[in-house]
Amino acid sequence: MTNVLFDLAEVSVGQHWYWNLGPYFVHGQVLITSWVVLSLIIGIALIANQNLKTIPENLQNLTEYVTEFIRDLAKTQIGEKDYIKWVPFLGTIFLFVFVSNWSGALLPWRILELPNGELAAPTNDINTTVALALLTSLAYFYAGISKKGFSYFKRYISPAAFLLPINILEDFTKPLSLSFRLFGNILADELVVGVLITLVPLVVPIPIMLLGLFTSAIQALVFATLAGAYIGESLEDHH
Amino acid sequence: MNANSLFILADHFSFNTNIIETNVLNLAVVLAVVVIYVGDALKGLLANRKETIVTNFQEADRRALQAKERVNQAQIQFEEAKQKASKIRNQASITIENEKEKFNREITEDLNRLKVFQQESYKLEQQKVQNQIAEKLIELSLNQVKKKIKLRLNSSNHSILNNFQIVLFTNYKKN
Image (tube, rainbow over all chains, first blue to last red; front, side, top):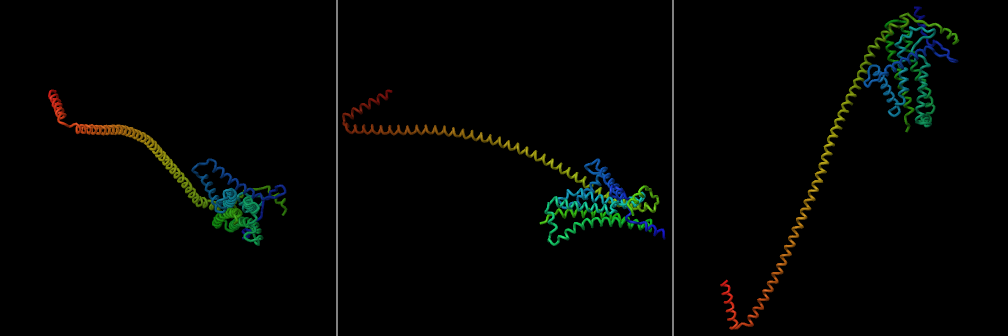
């Protein structure tokens, strides 16, 4: 019993393997897993599109399917007129989040023991999700201003001027909610699985892990959809 | 905790071989489930997609063939129409020539007929006039003869005339 309690105490959040990068300390384990995820995505993309055929086979078919999926998502969120410019951004966000989440749930990261902290999904770290959410904020600001110029800021006083504080607040709540939603979901999944493993090592965690796969896929979709919706919102015309 | 002291820890990392701690068994099951079910679903989706693409291509090919055929047919029809048009044009010019010739012929014929008619009527008028003149002359001479006869009718002249007539008759008989 004391052993289990000891193990439970081992389930900790906030242990990081710090790398010293000039005056900054970065979370090494997140960078490592991010690189793995990036190389996975880039590798698949490169392999799949090396020998393109008119009638797609295997991997090419898969990547084309994913591209179509992202295009459809962008089209429904941003609209027919401007969506094509934002497919790369939304695709990057979606694929990175999705592969990150699934890598955390499917790859046996724990085989590799770090000096401090442990390897997990990159989206398990608040820094990653905040970075993605801030990128989204930048993206929708850029989208709105590049399309409408200064009149983009009219949206802050519409439909009525007294809504200005709420509209300004929205620019802060959007990245906050985006980042915390993703971070919280993935961290919760991994914590639940971690706790369950220490209590019952076999079989019982499996349904939770499958559920985690499902939720992490949904979270990737939600993140990309919301990013698209925010961009679409700032692109839409006010009449 | 000082970050530097944490960083000092970063000089050893190793492999964890504890099967339970690394959760490898559960992960294997999850991975198998994912590969079997998600893979199956994905395979179905991809097969569908490929099939759709192939049918789209076939449809496009079929349509292209149809379009080509239609173009060919249209070209053939165009050629036919062109030939017909040129034929009609040729025929029209021939007909025009024929008509022209016919009219020319008719006109000359009419002219000739008119000329003949003119001459005939001219002749007729001349004869008529001649006849009238002859009639008048005869009438006049007869009148004069009658007058002369009335003036000089006596027995001596009568006998002279009778004799003269008899001589004429005898001469006539001799002939």
